[in-house]
Image (cartoon, rainbow, N blue to C red; front, side):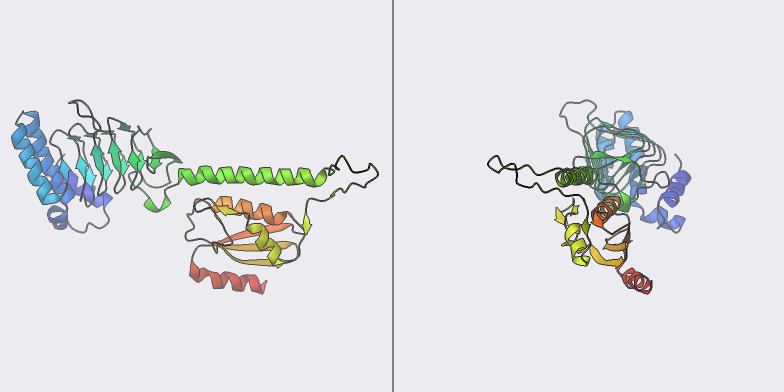
Length: 328
């Protein structure tokens, strides 16, 4: 755990680092770890007051509070570090990356193991709070602002309050947390429920349209019974498509995509229909849900054979896509 190894770790995990002199003089996270090693050594020798005093001085100088009883592994890097708090019985493994505002806190008043154990290669996002004697498994990632109160299995990604497993971790280099690509487990579940509901509605409508309409008891038997022979309706224009798209709800806000302004334009070319959707980012977790719902709704129209859904995630791409569609 030499100084050279610590400096090399900074260069590996922080692209802002430009020189050794800068790292030595301007990285409070590095200074806090160095001072903690001195305080932890004194703590293990039962110099409790002196160890706490050094820890307090370190907090004043760096804005990072690490209890001298906490155990830190090799190549731990605290990026920026302001507001980081690591409790007495916390244990941090090797190659752990900690962003600002992270708290490894306790949930008990007894003198026992009451703080988290963070295994090696874990990434703790900005503002993440990990509480209690739980374990964050090797290679796990905790999203920014998450509150973790249950153990996290290895290689998992957790987000939210309270934090929940968001599925397989996003692709990317080990030890790196793509803050802009974190999945949302709540939205995923809601979108699946809405998709299931939409399919059930389609099946119910198909059953109604293909089944004879039951006549009232008072109606004579000679009264003719109407039977619908086709599930599809004839395309009458773009307004019909917009009307159908109002049934596609954004689960994040509970409003349809037409009123939200997601539908940029609808282009009808014979049996082919292009629907251009405007989203704020191409990494939106609802993209596949929107595409499937839009295709299902538009394909329900008689005469429509192919539906293409284009995602326009940048405003400056709208005109070029519109021109290309117009020139076809």
